[in-house]
Length: 393
Image (spheres, rainbow, N blue to C red):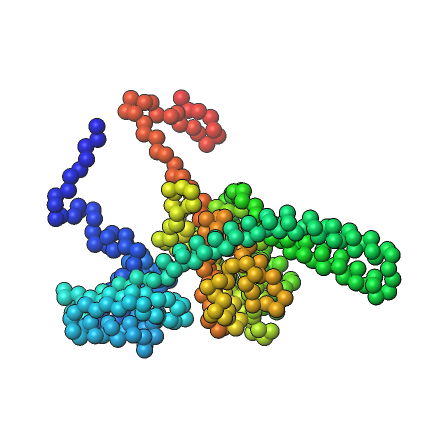
């Protein structure tokens, strides 16, 4: 029987230091000196600021937060009063970290004069999870609608089209134009139903190891030779990223949809589309129907400098038939939401004028660590081989 180590009450084990505890927290903890320069970050703060502790150390917090931000006012007040402060639903907006809403706790550190600890709890995490459930619910609604339309609409439409074709043989002139119109419109409706039938496929997708950069490169080439010819593409890739656990063809469709939307949004002159990949720590979500929790560390963003998405549409952007295009069907982003959900991933949108960002977080392929085989003391060593491969006795 394996002995279980007992810990003395009130004492931490020697291997458990303060940094280990801070890095385990899901909230960003930033330690500032008396000049508001960064002394330390935990992992959640590195993710929030998109900067490692080594790169951030010694830099002013104003590199990430505007000088007139209420956060800096709270830091100054806490430092002056030597007391803790809290605020809720504080909005922070800057080009580096985007627009976030946080709960803030600030406390002075008496052992270091002027130093304060800033704890930021991002409120958007809960709302992101709520939105993902809404997007998946919307996709399920489209699935049920697609199944109903295929049965209740396509069958009568085929009868209508057949009747119009028969009439076309016995009429002339303007009347023949009308019968042709009936055929064309029934074909258009059938094509729309066919597009919706993809939502009714509830089978698990086939997933393999996919190089996300090959997918993005293929989509970029397609865009630059077609619908995205007017835009300038900027690629910011992390070449060290592991493979995505996904379906190659579905991911190509997803990013073609997103890049096409971005291409249609950017201005004729000076349009830019930025594709970014990065590794993000700490995102874990539950898999529907099981107790498994999936780690989603790989993030891909598609950013454009178009006019932005109207605020009233952002909450329902991934629902079917919601679109900003004059002739759009509103099914493209609904398909994207379903495909991302089928991968077990998360999609979110952040849009202001001149900057719209769609972020996808996806699972990676788990590479099992090789097992170390321990040789018994009485087990002979393997025979050595010379350079020619022959065994030396």
